[in-house]
Image (cartoon, rainbow, N blue to C red):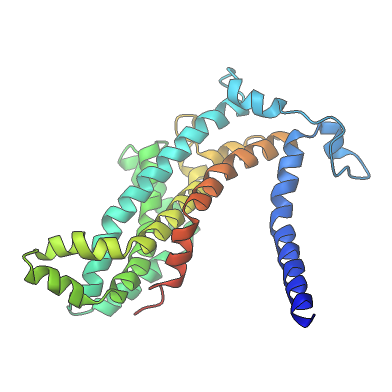
Length: 282
């Protein structure tokens, strides 16, 4: 009997936590299909009297180049490219650097590692003016490539810090055995170290994608046209000087949340392994 009560209490606690976590997203979905009158009614209506998916239809079919819905549709593609480019550049630079810091002995190695971590802690506002001027000189302002380059600059230190811990958790004897069998140092890195660090790579990829997908400050300042504006800036444009379209903001929020949620669901097994293995080593 005592075990049954304990299990029931555990289930109730889990349901309470799930409701607390999912309630904001549920309200976002409800707001996206509610009419304007329902959203502004007092007392508040928890379920709309006339549900409609018209806002989603407007976003995907709008042909008015000056409308926020048209900008948002293009922003989905812009954010996808920015997140992909920033993630590829960050992992391409960060993983070899993390491996070098984990395996090679050289002077100031620990200081260099802490420097990478310290650079990640810099507030974005401290760098925004310098980045604005630099991208202007490189003719990369208001471009997807320029925004991805900026995101890579602060995602890469995190990749180095996390992946270094995973490489430290892999016994170097495994790579030495591969080298005895004929592998070069680079071959042992590709065939032994990288496959064993796969949970950490997956976790780092998700972090990089989410960081690039959600970032707002740099995107707001460094982009100004539909060819480069990402989703966070496009959602902000549903709020004008004289009115705020809460329904379109909610619909944009639902569409913006779907890709990260789906990515996390697909890779959840690797995320759990990644969060519980190797991250605290070193």
